Image 1 (cartoon, rainbow, N blue to C red):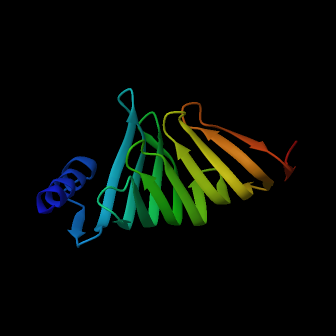
Image 2: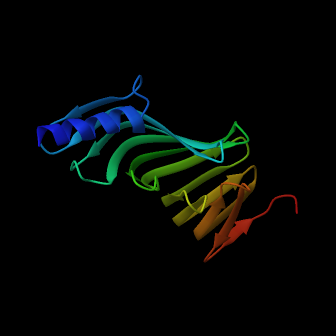
Length: 169
């Protein structure tokens, strides 16, 4: 049992995170992580980078890490496109999918987006937005209940109860 815990602790701290920034602590039932940083790439291109102040893997066989104080930078051709902040999230360690909830705010040079929940789906290279979505850009503003952002094409599609004001049309 001790060997299993050491092996899992080693894998999590060495392969999954940047060991120079991340600190991991273990007790009988969980792994506690501070200053986590992890990058997601596709075909050699950096898609986004996750940073979290802290995280907890409740069980050594768990496939999820509960995260706190999250910052995600989404890249477009190696340049930061926008940054997403959230108080809470859950990272799936198997497929690297990520669910964010509680005080979600995305900022770019042109837009501010808020919503209740946000889901990163890596295989689809999509970000799904759910609940109380608000997008502001200058004097334009839009709201919706559902939306999605394509990470590869950098386009957003809003669905379900779409309302908005388009300035300068």
